[in-house]
Length: 262
Image (cartoon, rainbow, N blue to C red; front, side, top):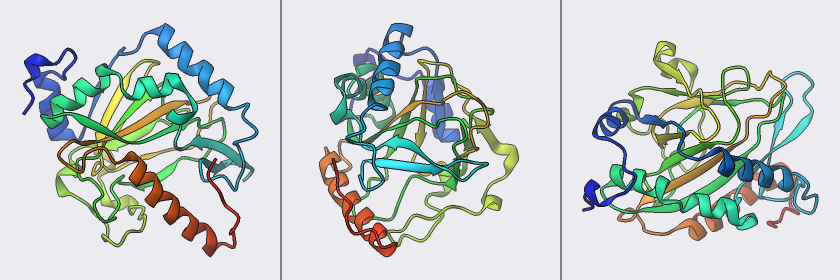
């Protein structure tokens, strides 16, 4: 068991209480303007990687335009193998120490993605990040690193307080299940309004969603997900192997057999 006194950047006692009560917590101004500018530069350079951005590449995610239905490139998943800057961010002690204060032990990176959310991109339906796969860690926590300002206009994440205490709200059948909107009380929704350099932490059982980006601004965010050391240890490679097998089966159902990972 780790002692918070040995950590340089733990969450405070008040923040830990809030996280256990609400299922999420926000930390302001963790990364400097210089660091955020570097991440923004990486995001811009990755958008030029035409060798990667393709509908058959399992690394890439797409969203429809909210008004026109145009297919928009939105996400690199994973991303840290494409950038030393993003890899260093994922292992930054300012993140790991805060997670260790939640877990009482070290955190292990499980998943990483860069969501760009360009103007017009649809949001995501209400859902939980947990999925009923064998050995999927119940200690899964996502850390959202804001590269751009996020607000209601550009489709910030909205988390619903307290529902994480009810556990997984869908069948544990290995499939992704959006939650019916009436699963939650809209009054308990908290929009994660963030400025560049802010962090938001939320657990895998916290229901959340996001609205379309109806602004002219991008909403670029780095999503880093972790598990407790005792809950499977380092398993990022294992996760992506399983995830890609799952994706290939899904794509095959729609007649896409020539998918690949690059």
